[in-house]
Image 1 (cartoon, rainbow, N blue to C red):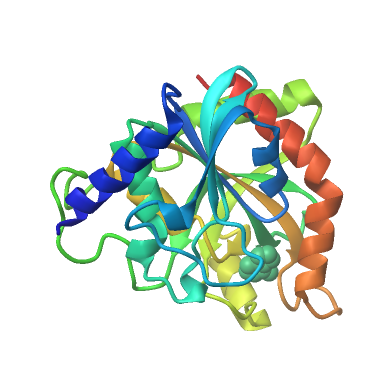
Image 2 (spheres, rainbow, N blue to C red):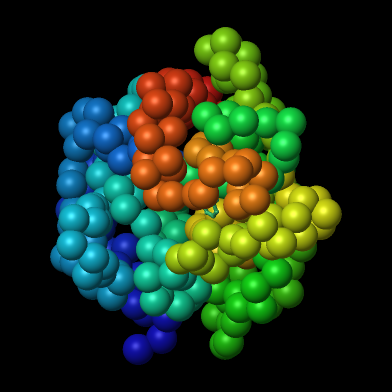
Length: 274
Ligand code: HPA
């Protein structure tokens, strides 16, 4: 079976479950934002493991559901749980849901995540609109045969992070009275946090934040001509910036502390990003 045939089977199954709902935007909910999916009205909830060909997380306690319904007057679909490279998925597998969304007719992709802060002028709890990214890892989600139905083999990435979407996000933040940062996200494979030397390298190369997700999805979306917006919750300073050691608890604690602000910003953007 070809990738396109698989994607179309996945999309057909989702369509059969969401009925007359026509999502125009897909959002990937990063750490701390998962609850947003529970606020959707008239929601159709689909477990990833029911969708043919979808990757299925085997990590206990990992929610893996696609929730489609209304939020802020818009029909959206939410990924409650994403696939990370560090879990052992290939980059191709990590982007399979995004490719399915495009086959479903969705043209806007909103990616959220938790990230480490590399910019020493900023602090944990800051929210950052992704203006661009750096992927030093050699792998790509599009490595291998290219089905032309998805998009061109070689394509431009200069507007991968959609300028209009970023404008809309900035305006939404202003209206909510939320201060946001704008900067460059650099992908690391994880699952270990970076070394202090890697964080210094990231800063020298022009990164403001580091993280373990989001970039593969943005690459796949860009190939398919989707408009992509990304917002990072900077949950901790990158390794070596402060004396204290990094730990996952700090990531979760900051995520929890900023959750209400992040959620109101995401809602406002969903309402206004047309
Ligand atoms: N590094 C990579 N990914 C992360 C971090 C970090 O410091 N914090 C949250 N996600």
